[in-house]
Length: 452
Image 1 (cartoon, rainbow, N blue to C red):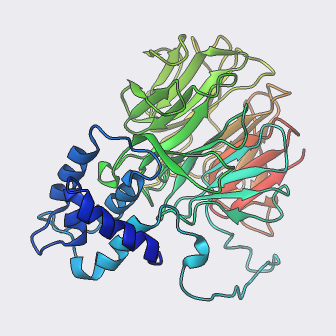
Image 2 (cartoon, rainbow, N blue to C red; image 1 turned 45 degrees about the vertical axis):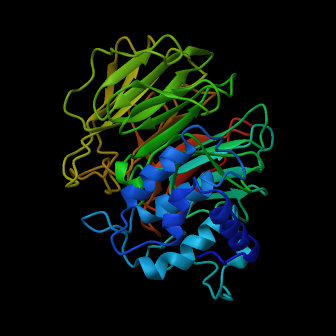
């Protein structure tokens, strides 16, 4: 909730008296019982069509209002509880970036601040982590994205974390990209891809290390129901990025000022070939794609892959740039089914070899038994950047292989004390920090790290 700025209210009043063309603002400020969201959207679109949308224009404040109102309309498009919402509308439009300190209430954390493993064998964790990203030169600066609580940052290697998006509305984050030429520039792909706790409103950008955020040219309304899964930055040209979504692969060459949908389909993952970013790989729920022109065009390829999987994760490694790993799970919404297999290509995705189909490394059983999985909700994979045969896979638990996925051993278990070290269940991200080779794991219970 935002506080009302007297200066902002004055500016709005001034705008209403002098800028007669801002009919959308008049209607927001003085709605009737029959006012619909679509009416206001049409007026706003007409007003901003040939005007600058930068700082001070009011466009960002309008889009924030629109985002909030899209969830508050009834079946005929009228905004619910309009009279009650008027003060919130004024506040939203009056302040461009309201400080967190303006939020009402005086809260003190009461704990618990820590936990100890006991006979219960389970820890509730700190909340789901969808994605982990790193500063390009400082290994202690790490960003995480969560399903409905925005983006968080640590500057001490993970001992303490600060929220970086409390000035935004309730927002999920499933992709983060830090500019390797200017680390204060950070991009986030909004929305919760894995769980749809929140839907994407596009890509947002920060130029001050995550302190404040602005929309980019890639944006959607929440009623478009777009689910974003990954944000991938070109390794040498930070203006080139890709957003992997259930609405296709979007590419930008100018830092999301403009973008285009370069491949339609419901995609889940994408990787560049190490050392050769002109070559890239991507997967839908069950189809492998390859590009040889830096993601501008795509074609299906890859013999030797299964045809009945319904969720896939990819992994590559600079230890062998020609290797492509393909982790397949059934992905059925019922949670039934079993591990479809781990496959590896030795020739940049042209052909694949089955490395293993057992044990069931996607289930909850300590020995990899049973037929359960949750790949519709969580699936992750990483390969050691210094050892192309050392694979790490995540489903309910974390499994490790030293022979390219031919065999697997339990590395972290969801139940503690148990058969292995404890990491909370449901693994959403596994990623190595290239600065220190530490392996980070994002799960339903927070973020964990391995140094070996």
